[in-house]
Image 1 (cartoon, helix red, strand yellow):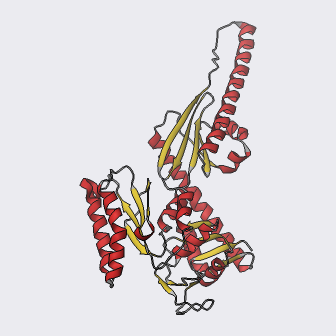
Image 2: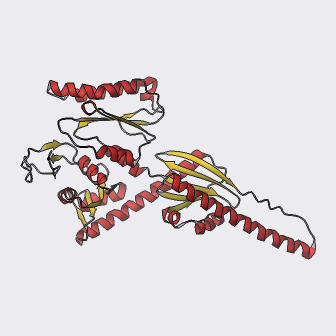
Image 3: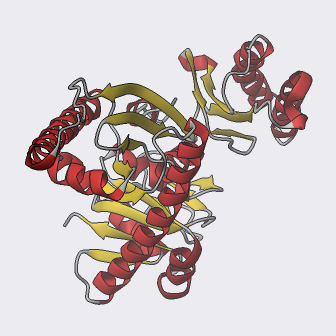
Length: 380
């Protein structure tokens, strides 16, 4: 699994234009027929060959082959245990880095000035980590959901044993009242314990959002017992039986996540467009966003799914340009052509601690029509 620290390790590396970096995203999902019988090895070699054939200098081809060799060697002995393998190689800098992802990404190969993190970062944005509590008034199950995978961490069982017993007349009524009081105390003790266990789990395994599932009464009471951190992470409830399978819990959690994510994206784009129109610490459009990125002003980068732009980058000061200027007006250096201008923008914002928000569906349509497909909230 790729973490934010993993990606920061890559984006904070010094850029050396004379030493390109090879980045490979290889889908090895064994549920896909095209990957069975190790056919993913053939896919990798074909992609590498296509890139090599586009290189018109023998020195470049030789450098590329040196970067590709450890990638081919690694995959030749790789046993598929994930859906996607990400590999980064720069032989001249003794760099070889690999991680697995349980998200099926498209096959791609990139050989450029920096590791290509955009697909991995977008996948992390789309598949945030969720904590899930499935509980009734006596039992609970706790889960972490991330990158399309669900993990059940522990089961919480209330240990107090409250049994109903028979009595007659007023004694029966009194007994039932005592039983109900004990039952309520037992349930509250149990739910407090569940809230405390999820708090500990949140400290051990960071997650972004929290889902509560189970009977309405238990879920409502549990929500009042959560810490402020967990209350702030709460995004919704699900009606799921306590004995539901992990696959059913995963399906329902991902469905809720999709709804929450799309709604949040619409709010983000609406706020961005309003703030930009009022010139309140926000901009829209490519050129304004590039200028903000150049000065480290971006707090949150927002762009539509599939947004693409090409341009140029200064190898000395890393200024980015969307126009056809050939030399950097700041350092007078010849500019390098960048086919995917979003990659250095994303890397820069992410490396400076900013947030990356790729929006889809209605939010993406709105951002394209009213904001040019890209914009940013600013720090200053």
